[in-house]
Length: 77
Image (cartoon, rainbow, N blue to C red; front, side):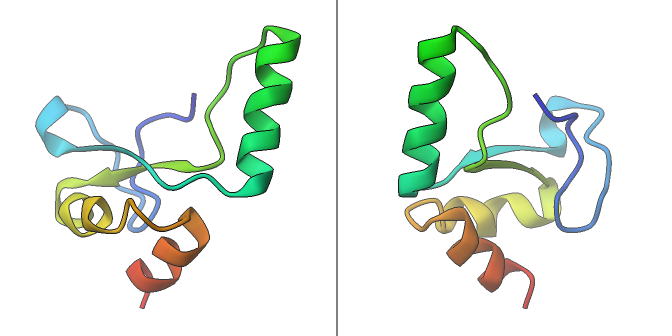
């Protein structure tokens, strides 16, 4: 897994209340990644999940029904 650092502002999340991990809607490539990982018995940070600090977490959570590409385009504006 990636360390808990906000993907927007790069703030390190040191405490549970600092934000959290958001899983977005899976793209076809994410489904293929997951299938490959399961097949090989591997684990890792999913390409459809990102960490967000307390400032960006709620907005990101509102967008979790979008793919990560779509959500990040909105969040970075």
